[in-house]
Length: 259
Image (cartoon, rainbow, N blue to C red; front, side, top):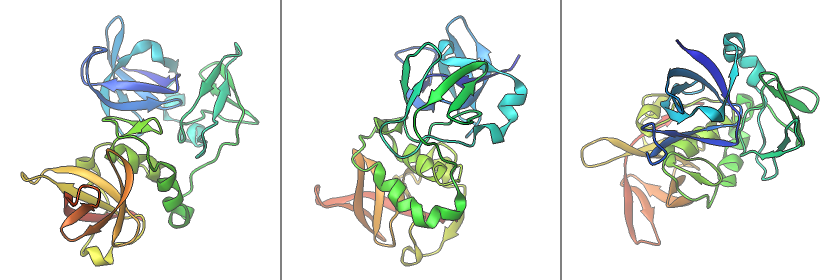
């Protein structure tokens, strides 16, 4: 039987298999909702509410909530901002250090709530707004510059290419799916690279034609993306050119517009 939960730690790994040795395919952040589809003694197989991504995680990292709370999107609109010091204080006085973009359930007057548990919010939260996407998306993306690449990562401590654009968009009021191949199915096609503008997403394929990489356009000749680390590189019709390596590293497939 399905049950409903919310992530109660700063960063929780979602794994491919129910084992601490299994690869991390994504992460839940504090305040992310998840539906438990299957459970063993330690592990549970969950589906995240925000992007319907599925994986295994340690059950102890979740707090149970009601189905009504799980479905209440308005209760989860406040987020932690683009800054390093996003500290929560639990009822027992211990601290939680949140990554930017973490959700603050039922935030009100300096406090948020996970189920019955109350947390003091020591920073000023915000609500992402699509209306300011054009003016804020570049600043948001560049905040993550030099963040190390991490397969499955969604935070300043490590982020993958699709996790990077998903988080940048989420902080600006748009929910993308999790993997680059899934994101490439969203949005409207931009016919030519020359027509690309700030905030568009460029997708790249391998020799078999499979989408394997994504980045965020900073105009029609520069891209910010996570490859080794979050970095800015030139892009042309052939793909991304890495000046350090002196070669093209990703071949351009399509460009999509979401705003």
